[in-house]
Length: 215
Figure: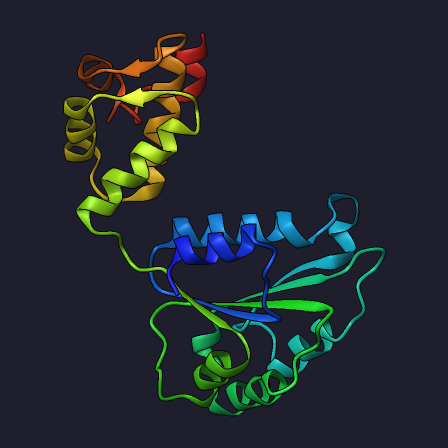
């Protein structure tokens, strides 16, 4: 499934015991993980029920031990594991065996770039978990993303400004988000972001930051 479908399922209260987040679009992965965390982890118990690990540092057996731990004063634990594609075949098979009957009180999220779909681990995620793909957005998708991001702040961006912003900043969502945050501050209290606003602010990240605009 894609990011938007994942969000719809999350908003409907449907979560899986295990997710594989695959692909190179790290910004959307971070956003998806943030929203999942907000949905299933009580803020006061995050220290007890949320854990980040790396497959570069720990074996699959330790991951299984972590997800098998009962949550404290909350319905779920959330365990995030990065770089699972770097595990040995043995470790991947160990985690694949866990996915045949995953613990329902925990949610396991494995992060990876491109993953070999022939692997048993990938196939077990297909059967007993969910695979969410995060690959670079098409130009039309980026334009839609920018519009939605700005509307979340109660603003609009005119078409010329939108095209100019994308041409000047490119397709990297981290960079675009940073420039949008600067534009939101710079254009306050106006509701419409215009091309001249983008000309004054966007792409000046080396010399102008958010706090400069607030001063």
